[in-house]
Length: 183
Image 1: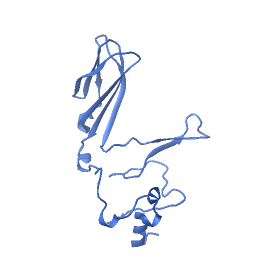
Image 2 (image 1 turned 90 degrees about the vertical axis):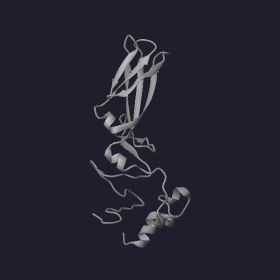
Image 3 (image 1 turned 135 degrees about the horizontal axis):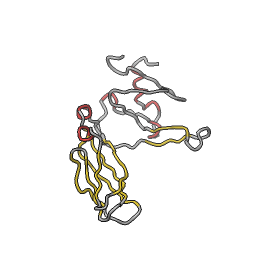
Image 4 (image 1 turned 180 degrees about the vertical axis):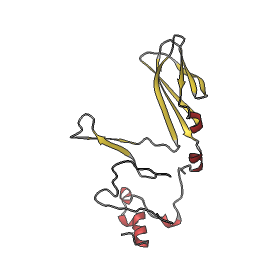
């Protein structure tokens, strides 16, 4: 617990600054320089790791997707989760026809958590994706500023100075360590 500054502060130059095995909960915004998952490789779990990077956006975006086959009249109704419209706004659609040449359109936009796909041929397999920008109360109250000026006390510092060919003394951590007893 901290009234100001950091509640937890950890630095390591050679290993993990923090390591958690189990679930971690953050009620608030998680800020990071990068992100990924790292798992035992499913084809060689004893010999390799498999890593993927996060997909990121300046928006608080949710992604929903699936595959569907249109009916004999060329229609398919996509049903989204019951919370979809309460959680999302500014819907965007992507459709891709699979296995044949055909046209596909969004015939009806999302209303009451459903939208309709139409193809010019019957029985067409379509891969669909819908994205939405979060607009739940927490998201609306905590939008992430995409670009922001550094506070005066952080001006002239870097989060990761070495990637800019700058010395460690130019790091925000070095400045903070010089101002407080954190060792």
